[in-house]
Amino acid sequence: SRKWLWVIPLAAVFLITAAWFGKARFFTPGNQIESLAVLPLKSLDAGENYLGVGIADAVIKRISQTGQLTVRPTSAVLRYLHEDTDALSAARQLNTDAVLEGNVQRADDRLRVSLNLLRTNDGTSLWADSFDMRAGDIFTIQDTVARQVTTRLHLQLDPTQQAGLNKQFTSSPVAYDFYVKGIYNLDLRGLGKEAKPQMDETVDFFKKAIDVDPDYALAHAQLAYAYAWLALFIEPNAPKWAELAKGEIKRSQDIDPQLAESHLANGLLLWSAYEGYQNDAAIREMLLAKQINPNSGHGELTATYQHIGLDDLASSELKRALEIDPTSQSLKDLTTILPWLRGDADEWLAAQRKLFPGDNGVPVWCELRKGRLEDAQNQIDDARSKYGDGPNFMSLQGLLLALKGDFGSGKAVIPGIIATLKPNDPSRHHNTYDIACIYALAGDSVEAVKWLKETAATGFPNYPLFERDAYLDRIRQTPEFVQFMADEKAQWEKYRQEFAG
Image 1 (cartoon, rainbow, N blue to C red):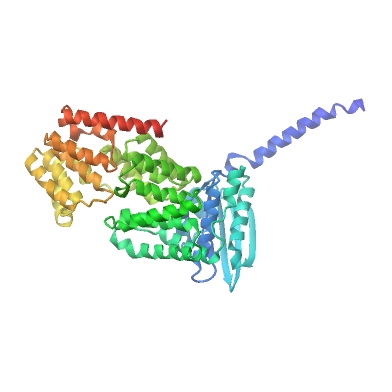
Image 2: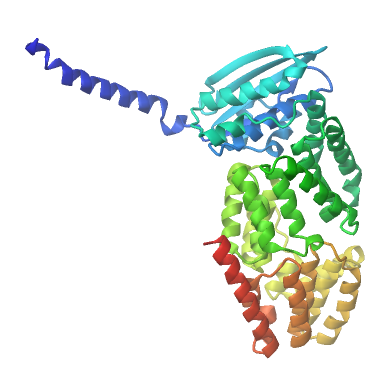
């Protein structure tokens, strides 16, 4: 037997080598799955789009909450419901390593669902299956699909993540059907009064879901978000929406405190006039949402961080948000909004050119910041008939006059701006900041600081902007401004200590 001893180390070398090449074959960087798109299932029946969206949304939510994979949100994939785009093309457009596609067909009380999980780089099918079951077993389909995707992508889940994967929010197919219609509508939400009818329909779907299942926490949470959106961006002067939102947030959290959606809705309200612009409390809620679902809250945090002057955190959150959803227009718009909030005209122009390569226009705001006053005057003259009664237009006009040295005329514009401001308008603090700048350019430090204090108290305590904005240079050495800045710096440092470590 001694003569065979040399075979043992040779066999070991062979096995190690085989294992190494096997690992290289199956786990090369090109084959690693780190991101996933779950496309809405195509309906083979007219008028059943909601069902395919609902299955996709449930799978997205469950896998996202594991934190093991970057999953494109429902808002990023909805457009493929009506587009004739093949799954691999959609995956490449969404820049994901894998894509789950499928179709669904209803026949009386039966459902037939077919699914296919594809690797993007070579089109390999990692898993395919079909389900034929009662419509009431829709939740079984969701469970099975979510588990199969995690298995096929070799995701390692701890017990908490596994529990999140298996979590069910309702046992009622009827309530779920209303909920799916609600989230489909909610994703299409708009701004202003013209968006009100569509949001009313959204609210009605969630309320019907709750009527069927009063303990449907996720429906309460999404209804809260819809109410908060109405309160802030559609009817900001109708306090009832904020009160209704608070009631639904409480109900949702009483049933299930581990829902990212209710924390996001609460964060929106806390960072508004209805709750006194509690910046730190709003951020904590958004961070809780992100902790529950690592793919959520990044866009909301981006805007809030930037408003309070945490520029580096805002940029980091926006980068992550765009990694999760690189197709989102609202997130792309934030690439121009952040430099605007910093008062950086050069960076704004660079971001705008990147976002809209064919647009060579320069807005009045940039012309003023760049000191090109005649160009700004020409634009204001051209736009006067269309925008002359709005607070934003009047703010730009007042700044132009003050920058030209016509301080009396600049200050004379301010009462008109104030008359148009709405108490609960989320953009009010930008107009109050413009008013402060007009007074500062005129050298009226008392009035400037008064309006700076209101700006800071209503959601825009942007100490770094106040520190570097040339519009405020003329009043920098006055006692009231020095004291104001000392107070703002202390608050800003407190924010940094808590949120930036």
